[in-house]
Image (tube, rainbow, N blue to C red; front, side):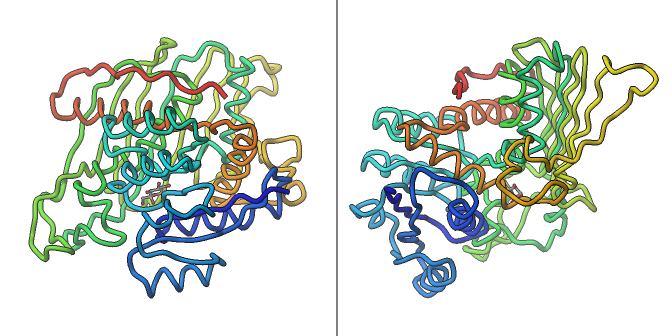
Length: 384
Ligand code: SOE
């Protein structure tokens, strides 16, 4: 079997989720390549060395450019902060490497456009790690929608609630806290959390045409970890928007890091003419499903535990009734990426799909500023 040599950039939270996927995928899936954890790159030598040893990388680099220059690397995986995505992805594509990139693709759609151009002109397989598409229950909703089981769609609603930035004392910037630094992150919850909601929504329900949004920065100044100075906060702490989809349906989205008590509450609901589906990340195996065509006497919300072998991805795991979790979504995406790459194809969400999400987040941020309805720039999604 051919090997596929992986070069990872970044060793934070996402470096760990991706590395776990690289190790687990060949144990549970029949893959067209044998993934090899060839090298990891990050600036701090002691820490990158420890990370490499812990996760089984054969080598490490302290400059990502060296990773790209190496002839023994087939795929570059970008798990470093958002302000690094563009430069690394473009260099990797120009070097003819396949590219996997953490979300959001760019800090802005303009950045993402250049990344799409680079991978498409190089013709290299690519994907963006919007992992929630590959929660089995969410994939199952996609199947039901595509089979027409829900009928015409009227409504979509989604939220992503957290509470970890409420303290005024929390600094911005630096490791772990770069998500609060607008120069690095590009935006706050719009690019970090709503982007997940939007990616899933575009996949399940098609393009969004226009949005009207409300954004807020509750804590206006925070100490910056790198400069040591108290600086203005440039990110959005909360973001909510109404929108219209091309298929005529209406939607509401909300994300915040100020919903006390909520740690990572991603929920979505889609209401069609015949049926509705609801999903909640905190109970990720459950698909709640209501079908109006059921016999009246027993009609009601079904609570389906998605663990059977005929349900998405589950035949690769344990026996029916037993759960998997968050980390498996990355394993699913990596296994699917290898299948696509073996055919020379990209895996949805591709960079082009990541760009479509960035067009929506750009429109949301713009509408938050203008307080007007804003049109979403067009980028047709990739058809798998
Ligand atoms: C932020 O706290 C975060 O880690 C996001 O960056 C991830 O994309 C999301 O899946 C969980 O929350």
